[in-house]
Image 1 (cartoon, rainbow, N blue to C red):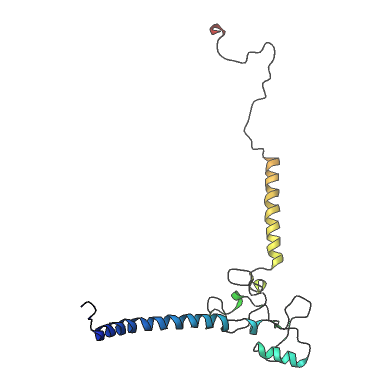
Image 2 (cartoon, rainbow, N blue to C red):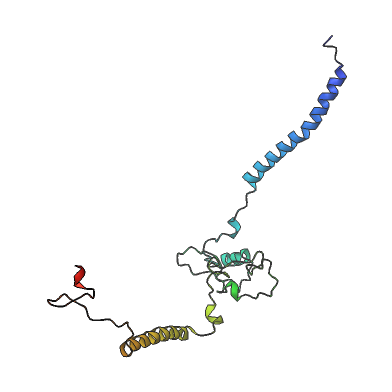
Length: 193
C-alpha cells in the first residue's frame, strides 16, 4: 500500500524541482566558463603601448609615429642612450598645472584626455608634485629668491650679533661668594647654635 503513489505526481514534482534548479546550474556553469575564458584568453595587456626598439629606418619611424597617433613630422624619439625609452616619443615638458583648467578634459582631475600619450616623467609631474614649468609661472626669478633668503638670514644674524655686542641684555648677578676666613655668610643669630 505504501508504494501505490501516483507516478504522475512524482514526475511532476521532479520536473518542477529540476526546472527550478536547472537554470541556476546552467547559469553557474556559464559564469564559471566565462570567468575562466576571460581570465585566460582576454587579459588586458599593455603590449600595444609598451615602447618598441629604437627606430633605425624611416619605415620603423613611420610605424612608431602611427602607433602613438602622431604625425610623422611631430614624432621624435628619445635618443638611443641605453635608458630603455626605445621608440617612445619625446614630448614637451608640460606639467599638469601648466595646462588649461578651462579646457573640457576627459579626465579633468589630471588634465588629460583619453588615449593621450603620457610623458615619460608624468609620474613626477602632477598638481601635488613637481612642475617642470615652475620657473615660467614664478613671480620672482630664482636669483632674487636666493638673494632674499641669504639677505634675510645674514641680515637678522648681523642685527643679533650687533645688538648683543652693543646692548648687553642679561640679568644682573652678584659676584660668586667663595668661603673665606672671618666672613659671615648668614644673617641669622648665633645664639640658636
